[in-house]
Amino acid sequence: MKTFPVVLFVYNRLMHTVQTIEALQKNYGASDSILYIYSDGPRNQEDEQGVAAVRRYVKDVTGFADVIIVEREQNLGLAGSLISGITEVLDSNESIIVLEDDLITSPFFLQFMNDALKFYEFEEQVAAIHGYFFPLQTDFPDTFLMRFTGCWGWGTWKRGWSLFEPDGNKLLKQIIDAGLTKKFDMNGAYPYTQMLEKQVKGKVNSWAIRWYASIFLSGKLNLYPGESLVKNIGHDGSGEHSFKSDLYDVCLSNSNVKVSPIMISEDIQLVSRLESYFKNGHSGLINFWIWKLFGRQPFIQHATKVIK
Image (cartoon, rainbow, N blue to C red; front, side):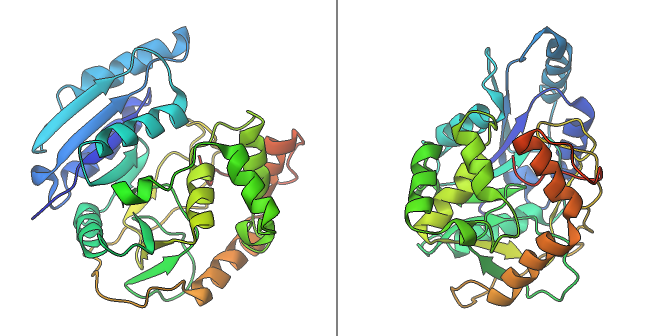
């Protein structure tokens, strides 16, 4: 089958990286896929050993059509590494599938991503394809569309990434001037505007809040699977912007998610369910970001990351 390049961003977490790659090797279509591995440089002396261990491991990775490793001499940080890596790969490719080193994929992840990227290649209203969705207690269609943008196992086209605006201040001004802060915050369910403000002030180094804001302001949509094809194993306190939690655990789909024609519009009912999920089920999560954003101790200690 026709496949698009997979780009994996790694740093210093060897055990996470091993699990991520071993799961990816078991994917249908892995042997036909080119895998790019971007290894960021160590941030400090303490990280050097971990970075070196990951680099030794990835040099022996097999099971793909080709493995291309890019080792950064300097530390770019998660946002810098990811933004530059995606831009570089899309300079010579029309589409891309993006993973980070703490994501376990279903064996059907690559099949779904490739099918959806091909199916929506010329649908300008769809900006990105996602492999993860939240564990809501509801029945899902095979696929659905939302304005909300995630960051755990996703793909886009050159046209989609062209929407990305790296200037957080510009994005924030547009959202405020248009009176869209409440809608951007999913009707007050989650403080995304405050996260963007912190990014602008240099207190949160997030690429994904800018990616979400960019797609949000463009009025484009994101495609999600009815059954999650990605599980995040980084909620063990080991990653950047993370707390220990099992709030986002999902059961990976054990079958392919069918990609077929649907109405090109946001699924309002599922948007409402997601807003309720944030509002009612994740007080610990909200308190975590209150702590991150304002330096106040959260009332509930059980919390996690949402966006990097």
